[in-house]
Image 1 (cartoon, rainbow, N blue to C red):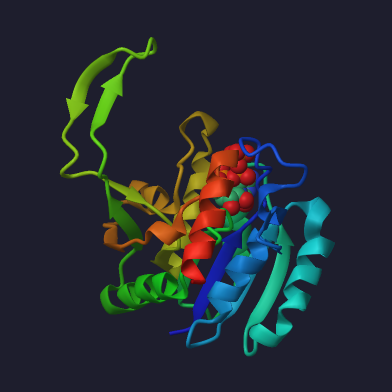
Image 2: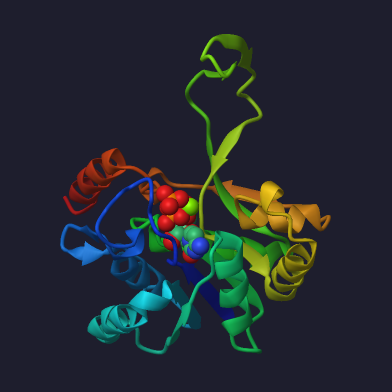
Length: 236
Ligand code: CTP
Ligand code: MG
């Protein structure tokens, strides 16, 4: 089935607090966008990649994509402007996918070291089951619920908890329709924090496959140091 990937890279990166939008920050000499494009275009079958960026950074994104053109053979790559909220950027990305795309993977540029095989694992499971699929990791720390004052209320049973990553994979029509419904319902106070939540609200069952610690998300400056270390370990 024809594969489409929406790479959302249109956020500001306020919590990181860098000079540029987060997706344009460099990790060991390459922007987060470049790391992601390399991983995606190393998939065994090519498809359509839509990179969603801040309007102000479209030209820079195009030149990043151009710079790795020797690695993106067979891929159709589009660069489009994003929205104010992540779910808007995703909706714009989905509507920019070619009509023939049947499976859509949605990936955060903020997870630059996500291995190619995680994209493969998610895509293959969507193909096998026809259902939404997300990568998940068991929660290993003890988890507690606390009050506004930081005082502990209770320990939460972690045996049924996972933390989830991207790419998240979907039958294309299902995710596109769910995002259109969300737009119509638009209630910013209750915005979904991932795409699996968007299809779940529409009644779909979401499956999980194993995630990977390398898919760690860059949120704060401390994550930058952690990712630099992970990159060194990966290339040893
Ligand atoms: N994103 C996007 N469009 C937005 C907001 C976020 O495409 N309007 C993307 C980000 O670029 C990122 C992913 O969604 O790849 C996950 O968002 P997050 O980690 O929150 O990134 P930012 O919104 O950029 O960071 P912050 O919330 O700290 O400002
Ligand atoms: Mg954000």
